[in-house]
Image (cartoon, rainbow over all chains, first blue to last red; front, side):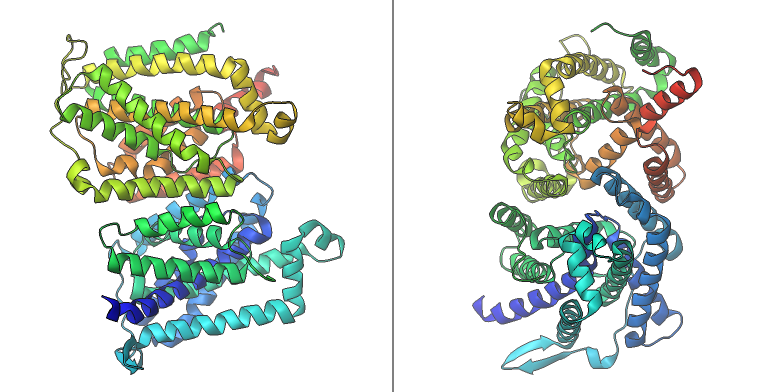
Length: 288
Length: 314
């Protein structure tokens, strides 16, 4: 049993990385505007379909579909934010939940109508297949690739939040929207741009996730719980907290399913309850 | 406490269903049971302002408790109902300490998490609950020793309607009592209520437990009238659909849940006959339209229209 520990750890980290990239947009939206967006998984699903259809029908190489998935989800996010989401920022959480639940149901139905209810296959290019042996452990190349991409994105996010002017505006708006608006920051526009970026990252995550989680029209509902878990446990609006929570949940989920399959999914729900009781405000630590 | 004519008409209409649609009593009893379940959510959502996405936890517990109770030898319906209500109340009370912490978002998440945990628990304990195959071969005795449960749903409908009416009268009494008034105060401003000396936490735990008992009752009715308990009694979609029904009907006036449940289930049975996927699409669209154009649901819209047409504030 113990000999498999490094492999389980590795799979858990890869899985957690995926969760992080799909949830970070949702976390920032919740932290910035207190908007509960249950439809975030629909953007991930959209990115996934762009990737799958781009490869299967248009013959675009896998790596080239990833930016397309990002752009498609970001574009749809921009349109929806301007047309619908914008009007609900000041409404009650219940209204936001209902609206975004409605959007999710519609996206599930639309996905079934356009692409059918089956799983979409994805054929990874040869250089991402197989395993490499590092320090005597067999590691899946695609999972290494995932971890690398998430590492890059996290570094880019942290740097741009810490070092750029726009990042400073986001941090200020998350901390206190009213004061930031008083200081001349256009909080509404900061939020729109963040929403669009977050949707795009969701789409990118959805495209990367096909090989690990699969892709079918119920994706937004199936993984909604995971996104929300990550955000609530990590503390909305915190990159470090979201990353910690994603890795923890990924590790515990994979380890739980591997070592104690009898209680399966129980492990992460139990973990969530424990973490929420210990840290009611989320795991956020350090500067955001 | 007097009953308005519209209310009396509503209940007479419910009774009339029995004679006017004798071929649709199975669906009608499902509607009544779901209406009872919606009533339980309306008590916490509409009156106490607790947003819950995991109310199926209590419903499912009641359904399994009553189902197991009947399966293991005691098929008497009324005592089964009590067992179901007790199970729902016990789950609600036990989880209220974590579910009522924090703001709306935390509550949503924790109730959702509790619902999912119970679903997973029922799924894993297949030796007791039957797992995905469900709990079947539930033998019910005749209701009061007089009315056997028939395939046409005649007993089921009458039985469910009587229970619904009884619970409705109790709920109506609760929301008009000082206790109900303090709940509305907590919904509108919890901080001010606690400054006035109202024990906010205790009140919320009390109504959450009462709501759990009613949800358990509804679950017990479902397993008794269908003589089957499926895993979906605990599913997320049951909780989500319930929230949709209450909001579409209008939260906070008791009839909203009943009307929402009736509209929802009748529309579902008509539309999903065509294609279940399209039903989801229209439901999603309806939700979005409701959020944008009719925040009070069917009830709120009716009141607004009446005010516009008759200029009479209610």
